[in-house]
Length: 470
Ligand SMILES: *Cc1c(COP(=O)(O)O)cnc(C)c1O
Image (cartoon, rainbow, N blue to C red; front, side):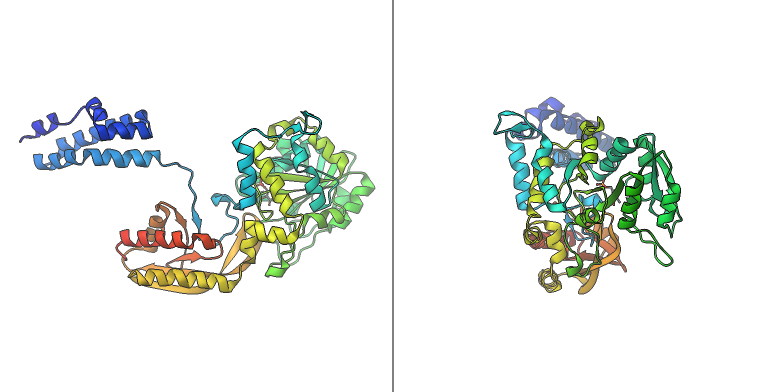
């Protein structure tokens, strides 16, 4: 058979669509997707047949056509958003969605999304209610604030606070706290956007309360303290305490705002971490307004929580920007469920995944690591594999430089580079995200949930098998 005969045998789009198998496929995956894949594949086959050496090759391409269409359709229909296994050794990984949620938090979201709900409806009175009502009292109870409000994230919270309380007026900030958080959140730029005027004071390493006092003028609207959540200034350093700032604020009748970044509500020292100021402590020390993220150490949904003195919160709540930043029903429900856990600290440790991960004992992690190693060796793994002690980080702009003890499985496959192996792991049906260090792939156990052990082992086996190391 000649090349032109092979070309003549390429089926038409409509003919293919009429074949029972592809007909079924287009019913399942959508006719548009299947049609466009068929067009692309036909074009590819045509080009290949024209360029190939002999007609037999072309015939082989034609006979594999339907299989190829099926594979491509499946690839296209794969949802882009996927669950992954985080073995990278960072607990609050912004790129991996920060805090994972627990069963009770998810149940709240499910309830909110499935049918109608009382988002802005007062059941007792049968009239319009406020969406903030579901969490306001709870946040106050847990943090000690007089009032509270929540918006989409902490960046929005800072912007809203400044817009509501300091538009066209000056806000004093230490030069050591002009923070940039990942994703283009920079304090000077946020202030500009909010319409407030940055008044820097002090030096990068040392700022004293006198510096704040000197910077205050008639046009000062507030003193702002930003928690340096992703870097540390060490050595010859000084910054005033919140008490000192609060007393200066009182004197000048201006509020002290604290951007706490990660909203810690519990004591982390029990688990080998340094003392991280809690929201309650900040308020007790005299901060007028504190804001923090919902999805960092609080362990809740993405949100920005603002709490503190009622007279300021009311102004913030009534600002027109509030409408653009308000929470949806799903986040509202999860936020309520999250704060409900904190009514009892032990409940929080039990039910909030990020706290559960921090509390895991090294022995448990070690057992998990050994089991994975054993399973791989039993399946005939070829290469180097080791269980070793290591550390992981909190991440997500929390506790910079601090580590948690961890146990890792480190792997060096015999036949491929660690980069190739890591890439293969990312392409599994449940992608696995790892750390590459010392020319080895490190699987950190602290962030691999006990329930994920089996699936992680499966994914490792599949990746090793396709890389020829099993
Ligand atoms: C993380 C962080 C923010 C930004 O919070 P998002 O919830 O990510 O918007 C702002 N300020 C500080 C100090 C932070 O640590």
